[in-house]
Image (cartoon, rainbow, N blue to C red; front, top):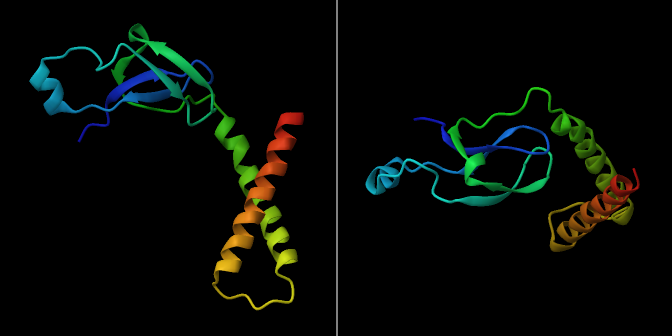
Length: 127
């Protein structure tokens, strides 16, 4: 099975990202040689930037990450920070209580993750 798709090169980080998936049967049936659309607005999974790409930008190729792109690697430590921060908040809120799977436990964990993400987003904005 081929991993080819209709792709664009991200204007932000230069990674090659999927624009349209390929459906060989559909493409064969309509005799198309070009992409299924003439433009697309895409958000890059790597850098998070959103751009509109025209038909001239859309090509058939294999999606791949730009070797020079380090954005995803830089975000990974924040995942660990999120885990630690949410765990501390949840532990403080649940101190002295028995830890068993319950609606209260799920709610406290969800609230703790939301609080940690809010703090991390504020830190990112202030950088």
